[in-house]
Length: 480
Image (tube, rainbow, N blue to C red; front, side, top):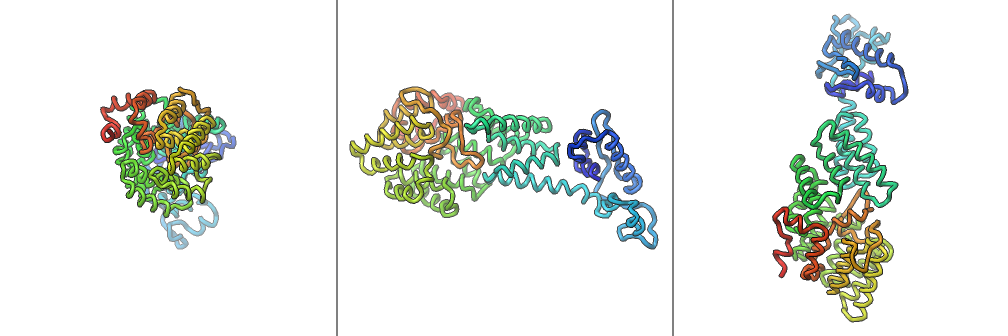
């Protein structure tokens, strides 16, 4: 019966002998005779019970394929006697076991028999896709996908989703996480490509694995290719939201973000980014309304809380921002972040020489301690017109130049650069170097006006990207 289920579930595709051994005997070693006997039993079922409605074709040196199956029940062709069961089997046959499990399958019908593992597969795949789209995927999602590929090893979609989800783990700074995730993601992607070379999630997995080894234009092109194949692929759209914003194309990033919201209307990530983009565009009152609603919908999540805090801090509302720190200092990030921002808010509220010297010193020490503080410190110093100090940290963080060299970007301080990441909040330095969204926020307007900013953009490859696409960043169009 298990052999019949596996063959039926393959939908007319060849099932290898190795797959049958794994699926039907759970990997326990049995001889070829066991499989041969099972195949003979299925063939007998086809002839005696199903009236020849399906056959088992042998594929030499490979495996087997079920052919001719349809959705009709496996009806008993013999004439019914006075003790016939309503579905066509006599009580005598059922009681004696001469029909056994095969007859029970006939009662339920062929479609029911074939659909049980398919329904399980569909449920697992659907659950995983929903989790990925809603950014709630976790270890259980990975386990579901492993079950799905065990049920349907011929599904490129299942392998692709597994490759994508395990591939996200490679951005971790912890080699104990990154190394096995890389191997698993590569193997899953290879399995997907062997079935469908254009599987969108396998392509997205490769995009994640290759990361910053691709230049900006290549990364942009890969994402657009994936979206052309799968127009509802929100993870790919989300990556393009990040990439275009990191390249200073806030208007274009807004359009992609709105497209993501149309697919996931209650995504706290994309709704929070809507508020950020409104703020970046100078529409602060609208940004306030949006982020207030998102915080109300997701009061226990730190990402919209952070967006609310940043907008307060950078729109001349330091007291409101300070009240948020007092309520939840741990939500700002690792130890030291709250004290850094307290010093920043003091200086933003009163730009005395003493406060400016204090925050300047705090920013340099924080950036030297961990690259995770670079995002916060560049925005803070830029907002305070401490341009030289801001460039010193930005050049050290992005280009490894200058007197301030961040030792590690292993744990994120601010989450504004990347946004909500449901799978892992750890990022390596290469990942942070291509997430430059903060450079194009309102507080960094002062450094964008400085001639050194173009040199910084050139160093990270942005000027080549603008040239390749024939576009100009928004700040060059609107800022004087």
